[in-house]
Length: 139
Image 1 (cartoon, rainbow, N blue to C red):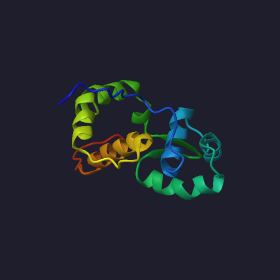
Image 2 (cartoon, rainbow, N blue to C red):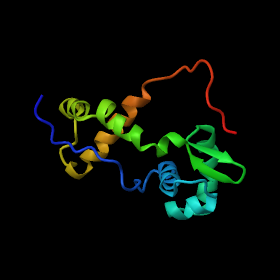
Image 3 (cartoon, helix red, strand yellow):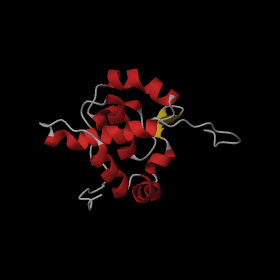
Image 4 (tube, one colour):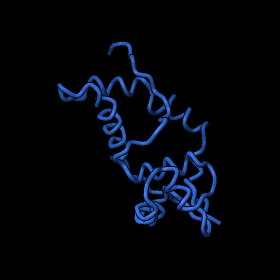
């Protein structure tokens, strides 16, 4: 394995073609319980589109609701967790291994980061979790 030239950073904006992630990203950017309209405005999406996706995002646990306010799972606001992920899970060694093993289209140098991101996300999605015992409930 060669020395990695990968720089791992926290995302500054959401991809335009992933509506649910744009909604989640907007809620994270707002950083506090917000209305659906505030989230839609932050995500630069129509209120109808946000209203359409919101029930599924709440069901999946990406967002949580307290009466009329919506917020991201608190874990998405935890900067210490982002640093821990960067250092232990999504680290340069993992990214370099994926780069070394992945097949990238010949003509897609500007898309390589997006391809890499999708590979990592889907690698993580290959795991399943079975929780037992007590979990924190929304009050």
